Length: 291
Image (cartoon, rainbow, N blue to C red; front, side):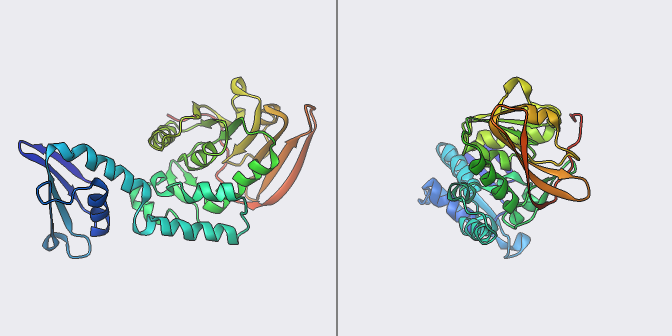
């Protein structure tokens, strides 16, 4: 979807894509008539593997095609297709993620849109991937695992805090499972991209703050659950203070050696019950903000 130019008699959209992208696009747009659409490939330009596809259409079809482009992008093709997502979900089940609600949300969430295009074909691998600024998109297993812990340990999920928006992928999973989500991110460009992605997905129950995540979001608390996508050396007291009665904090803790902690507030007391769950590897929870 590289270039779009308006001409007096029509619109020319050039896609350096394989036919498996363009033809689903044509079907979605319901543009089957040669009167409405002409399509041919120039395999001599770049070789038969990834030909230039030229689509010529009239002005009245632009909205339908743009909507179809968006739909195909969300659904994915090839290494980002629904079949690839199904294989990822099966791996998560094999690894022990068992909450069916969580698995269903992961199955239907397009992870590839949270990565740069150059890495989108790796979106459904069970590995963390770089998103810039020294940050990563967490591996699908840890996203599923932490999310199901939040769901199983907290009685209510009306108000949930996420520390570290990152790409917005974990945010999008939580947003589909909780009432109101508050997400804090210290790196502004990452937050801006995440905000747009969630808006494109139609998720409207998320509030964002550009701030130091270690302090949480006191003015929006208390929270039924807090999930941190970055690892402090010790559990921040500010986050514990923002837990509602019986609220749960799921957070990786440590420097070189990290472990996933689940901390539950005992009623409305100042007592907290900590359980260490498993070894993990996260980016560190850093102080300050970046614009």
